[in-house]
Image 1: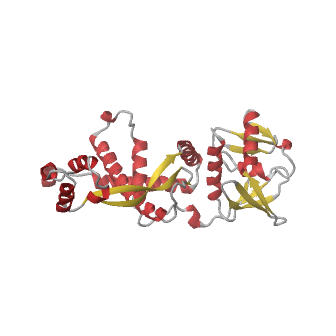
Image 2 (image 1 turned 180 degrees about the vertical axis):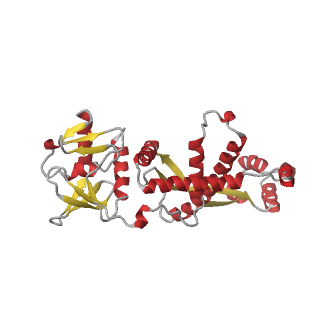
Image 3 (image 1 turned 90 degrees about the vertical axis):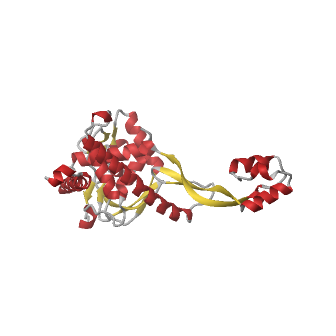
Amino acid sequence: MPFSVSWHTLLDELDELSDGAELVTPLSHDRFRITDVQEHRVVVTLDDTGDRRPLQRDQFETLYRRIQDSDGEFDLDRLPPDADPYPAVLSLHPRFEIDEERGVIIETDGVTDSQLATEKADISETERIEPDGVDVYSDALLLIDALERHELSDLTALETDALVNIYTLCSDVQRNANELRKDIADVLLDRLHHDQPVHGQYGSVQRTSRRNRSLRDEEEVVAKLEDAGIDRERVTSVDSSKVAEALEVTELAESDLYEISESEYVRKAEVDEDVKESRLQGLKDRLAASDDPESDELRQEIETLEERIDDLTSFSTGTQMQG
C-alpha cells in the first residue's frame, strides 16, 4: 500500500480527535497534544513547556519506510534525537502500535492500541446524529445494511422482496445524492477557478465550461439561409441536422443561426480508489473490534432503520386486504 494512503488515513484519525486528546511519547513519556493538522505536517504542543513543534510528512514517510524495511517493526532506540513524537502520532493509525516492553513500533494486520493517554470527549462528539435536511443519509445507511445482508454475486438467487428493497434504496440514494451533488456544485462554482483542480481526500474536481446552442427564430434562420443561397425547401423543417449541413457550405457564422451561451459546471476529475478502500477498511475494523456502547447504538440504529424500510416497501394484496 502506498504511503499516501496510510498518510490520509492517519490524518482522518487525527481530525477525529477531541480537543482534550493527550498523547505520550514512548521513550521520554512526555505528554503532548495535536494542535493543527495540515496536508504536509502535523503540529503538536508539548504540555510541560508549551512549545509548538511541526512534525513533517516526509519524516513520517521515512519512519513508515523503516518499519516496512525491518519486517514490520522498528526499534525505537534507533530514532534520531527529539523524534519521539513521531511514533506516538503514527500509533493513532489503525495499523500501527507501540510495544513499549520490547521498545518497537509495529505494523499489524488488525486494529491496534495507540499512545493516546486521555481523551476528554463531549457527549455530542460520540453520539451519531443524523444531519437535518440530508435525505441521502438514512437511505445510504439502509442500503449499506441491505447490501451486507444479501449475497449479490448472483442476483437471480435473491427473493423478489429483497430485490425490490435494494432497487428502491438504490433509486432513493441516487435521486437524493444527485440533489445533494447539485447543491454542492453550486457552492463549489464560487470557489473554483478554470484549469485549477482542487483536491480532496477521495478525488478532485475542477471548474470547466459547457458550450450550448439553440436555433434562433425559424423565420430568421430561413431568411438568412436564403440570402446565403440556400433554398428554403432544404431547411423548411428547420431541424438541427439540416441546418448544420447547410451551415458547412455557406460563409454564415454559427452565431447567425444559433443562440450560443456557455454554462459553468463542476465535473469529477479523478477518484482515488486506494484511499477509499483504506478508509472503508479502517471503519470496518474499528466497528468489528469495538465493544463500547457506541457500537451497540450503531447496530440498534441500523435495525431501526431496517424496520422503517420494511414498512415502506411491504404491501398487501387486494385479497389480503378484503380478508
